[in-house]
Amino acid sequence: MKLITQNKKLSLLLQNNIAYLDNELYGLFANEGQDVETSSQLRGLYKLDTPKPIIIVAKKHYSESWKTYSAISLKELKQILKLQHSKVEGAKPIQRIITNKEQDGFDVHTIVFHELIQNFISAKAVLLPETELLANFFNLNKKSVAEVETPAGTLFWAHSGGKTFSAYKKGLLSNISNFLQGVGLPENADVYSINAEQYTALLFELIETTTLDKLLAIASINFTNAINKNKLHQLYLAPLLVATIFSVSVSGYFYMSKSMLLNDISDNRAEAMALMESKRKIDTIESTLSSVNSTFKEVENTHQIWALVYKVINDGMEVSRFKRTEKGVELTGRAEKASFILGELNKMPSVSGATFSGDIRKSRGMDSFTILLQFDTTKHVVSSREKNES
Image (cartoon, rainbow, N blue to C red):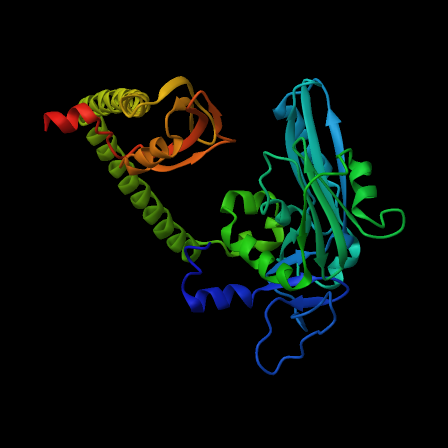
C-alpha cells in the first residue's frame, strides 16, 4: 500500500478511513478544528462519531489463546477450524497456524473479539488486532521484546519460538521482568520502547508497509456482510475483469523482464568468471609484493645498524656490545674520547639523536661508556668508505 499512498491525497484518504478502538472510537490524525486528546496515552487522537472501514482494535477488546493439535493433517485442521468459525457470532475470529514438528502437528493462535465491540463497529468493518499488527515491526526470526505506550495503556509484547505474547502493565505484571518470566524469556533481553507519540504514526506506517497477504492474514473480515451476493451482477464483474486483465498484464511484463535479465546474466557469466579469476591473481600478486616489501625494509634497517657500528669503529671506538632496545640502539665500548664518538654519531644523517646512557668511566687512558641512539630509517647511512670512494 506504500506504493499507492505515495500520493498525498491517497495517503490522506487512507488516514481518514482508519480508526482506533479503545473505550471509544478515535481517529489517528486530527484535522484543524477537531478536538484532540491531550492525555499522555491518547495524545494526538480525536473522537469519532461514526465508524470507519478499517479499525485497529486495542488488546483489551479481544482474547488470545494457543492450542496444539497433534498427529493431524493441515487439511483436517482447517476443516475443524472452519466448523469452529461457523459457531461464532459477531466479528470473525482470527486464527494463525504454525507447524509444530515435535508434536507432528500444528499450533493454532486464536483471537476472539469481545461482543462489546459490536456497539462501535459496522458489520462491514475490517478489524486489525494491534498486537498482530505490531508483530510486523519486528524481525520475527529473533526473540523480540517491547514495552509500548498504547492509547489503552502500557502493553508488554514479546515474540519467541514463532509465538507472540502480550499483556497490559497491571497487577502482578507491574514491570517487564515479571512479564519476561511469565513468557519464559531471560530478564536481560533487549527491550524496545515505543512511546505514545510514536505509536500512532507507527500503526499507520505498519498498515502502509505490511504486504497485503500478511495484512489479510491478521485481519477479521466478514465477507458475508461485506458482499451482497444478490447485487453482484455484471456491473460489478466488469471492474473486476479490468483489474484482472491489468494484473495479468503487469505480471507478464515483469516475467518477460526477469527472463531477459536471466539470459543476459547467463551470456555474461563466462566473462564475469574470467574477470573474477584475474582479480584473484592480482590480489595474490599484491599480497606477495607486500610481504617482500616488508622483508626488504627489515633487512635495510639491519644494514643501517651495522653501518653505524662500522662508522664508530673507524672513528676509534672499540665496540664490545651493541643491541636493539625499545628506546633505540645501545652501543657499549671504549675510546680515547667518548665525546668525540658521540659528536660523530650526531653528525650522521641517519641518526636522529645520540646520548650517553649511564656514567663515563676512565681506565688506562680510555673512556668506557654506553651510547643510546635513535636513527631515522628513512635516510640511508653513508659510510666513510663510501665518502672516500665518492
